[in-house]
Amino acid sequence: MNAPFGAFEHPVVVAGGQVLTERGLERLDLVVHQGIVVELGASVDHPAGATVLDASGALVGPSFVDLHTHLREPGREQAETIETGTRAAALGGYGAVVAMPNTEPTMDTAAVVHMVLERGRNAPCEVAAAGAITVGRLGAQLAPMAELAALGVELFTDDGTGVQDGGVARRAMDYCRGLGVTYAEHCEDLAIAHGGCVHEGAWSALLGLPGQPAAAEEAMVARDLLLAATTGARLHLLHLSTAGSVELVRQAKARGVAVTAEVAPHHLSLTDASLKGYDPCFKVNPPLRPAEHLEALLDGLNDGTIDAVATDHAPHTPELKDLPFDQAPPGMLGLETAASITYEQLVAGRGATIERFFEVMATQPAKIARLDGTGARPFGHSVHGQRVAVGTTANLVVFDPEVRWTLEVDQLASKATNSPFSGARLVGKVRHCLLRGEPVVTDARSTR
Ligand code: DOR
Image (cartoon, rainbow, N blue to C red; front, side):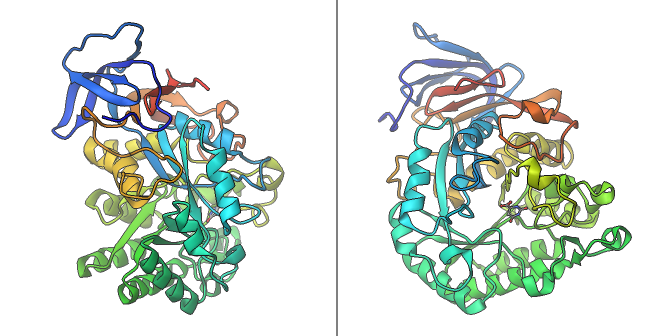
């Protein structure tokens, strides 16, 4: 049992919770020392000097992993920084996040990726990096993917835009296959989207806003599934939002295509009817869709077609987000509300098991990002997404599914305030979060 890099020295006891182990949920206490779970039992001796965290009435499992976080550093530090974004992530129960590469400059060189990883090293939540597929995310020339992969980059994406040229996508997938890394797509055919900033349907017509049809997403999903089958590359589909996309993934998985997919909490909980007040807080890309899409996404998440929940945490300054709807940038905050929304929609609303909740929030995203111990870890990332057992790294979340709370955006740790759930009553909240054994969140407050 080797202590993980950067492990917390002191003993911590997590007492009284329902703990997710290989056998399912069990009422257990656990002792953590030097970053490792060293004891699990119905009642354990408290080591001298241990910090005791009360987990009664709460669930204890692997801390969450976010496949899709916009930390905005470098370049847009007015909206978020690695420091504020990782504090928000820890408060949301995350032990690791994958930083998206649409920074300024783009994360398309080893220097920029190195800087992000280095600045994330001592954060309260581990920072992994996604690299850009193309230089400047312009869709033409491939980024130096091998150099980025050598730094431990496991996911490549031009997120913010999809790779429009199928020939470029095919070549990038060939490289991904060769490097053993994953090609991750923001699925949006810009020619079909034709500048639409909301879903094309009854609400776009009523509000007089330019819409983009579901087909703009689905055309690229279909293309990439064919290319993944052609090249043998691992494909991950970002923030899926339509019923047709879910069906395409379901069919491709049945054919044996190596594809995984994620969905964002807002697409599981909000429809395009939220746009009726023209509040740019509800502007997001892909756009909010009618209820039948939301239902299909929840079904897909429940039955395993969609593998993971990912926040697409997209902070924006008020100067930009308060512009008129058609001019405001798309994106919403997600890190501090994702667990509550997902628990409410999937477990409380859909009857999914608590095991499935931890699968979609922790285990599957850790696997997809290869933060489950299988990936290269030159920056000392620890192992995530494991069920609790003696000997596992203590990346743990204590989530209270009963707490009811009202979201006040000025109380968020994120620098930005563009949450669509501002003022909403939410159910379920992260109580404690441990990173490599360190209580980085206790009683819903950051210790950093
Ligand atoms: O709504 C979004 N915001 N979708 C994206 O794909 C990018 C993101 C951002 O970076 O703001």
